[in-house]
Image (tube, rainbow over all chains, first blue to last red; front, side, top):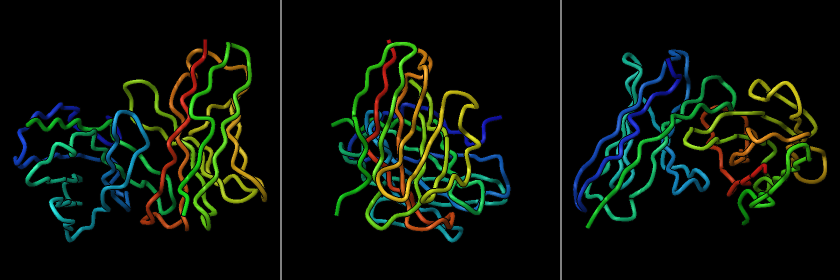
Amino acid sequence: RKEVEQDPGPFNVPEGATVAFNCTYSNSASQSFFWYRQDCRKEPKLLMSVYSSGNEDGRFTAQLNRASQYISLLIRDSKLSDSATYLCVVNDSGFQKLVFGTGTRLLVSP
Amino acid sequence: NAGVMQNPRHLVRRRGQEARLRCSPVKGHSHVYWYRQLPEEGLKFMVYLQKENIIDESGMPKERFSAEFPKEGPSILRIQQVVRGDSAAYFCASSRGQRGEEPQHFGSGTQLSVL
């Protein structure tokens, strides 16, 4: 079983749609969680950290369910510029060792 | 305020040659990480360094790969006697502290192609 699993997609949605991605992780001791986005295999860019209480940043909402070991990302009112690969990332230790999922590809069309 | 700087952006080597990848962290960051992304795969952790120290190298192949982060100058990832399977994107990241919740900031990567 992969440490971090994501549906690779692609998710094809029209502009303005709401889309949700899920991610599961295997290590129950994981401590920190993030969503990054990656465009065309360029560098990953931090989208948001994910907290147990859930957090929102504009059109983006992230949720963490520790009991079920899954993380979600909700994107509302999709824009063309949201087209990218979204990486679910877990820190497996108290220190900085990130474990990346293979990513979910999102394509937003006009 | 420059971000993480990596060079070169593209590096072509023939089998058996050496590859040296450089990474300058964000100013003020003393923690550096190297990741590798093979084609059609996710990023894989390789090594975590602080100034002059290797903290975690559990993701580094046992042979031909080494990394350093000297007191002065950039971090270097060195691959000796490269093989075709080393062709990948190599990303460097840095963080201000070592706590797990501190985000890592990534450089634009070095695309290594081995002929």
